[in-house]
Length: 99
Image 1 (cartoon, rainbow, N blue to C red):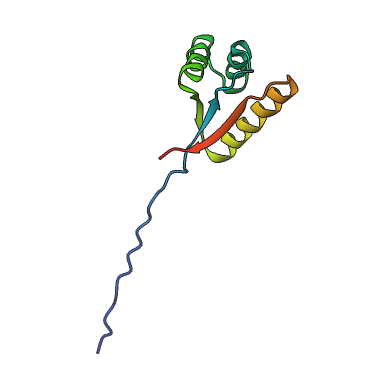
Image 2 (cartoon, rainbow, N blue to C red):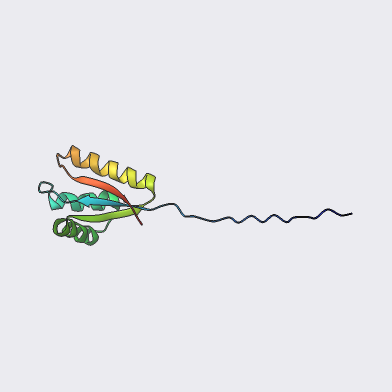
């Protein structure tokens, strides 16, 4: 007599890490030149990209500075906030999960 053999099949699903947008919010106190400089230095934007994003912040109230994994997004947010506070600006930078 032979025993029935059962084949086991494993399915592996690959899931990429979640992405998070780092957003710069508009305020009435932070100069546009400072925001442009921040976008160039922290988020590695070109001058033109930084100017476009700064105008969007001014006109629409917020703009995406970059899209990263969670740890890097948190680091960019923290670094931006520290630089803004050091220069006496109330700039607010937030993180939002990409859907």
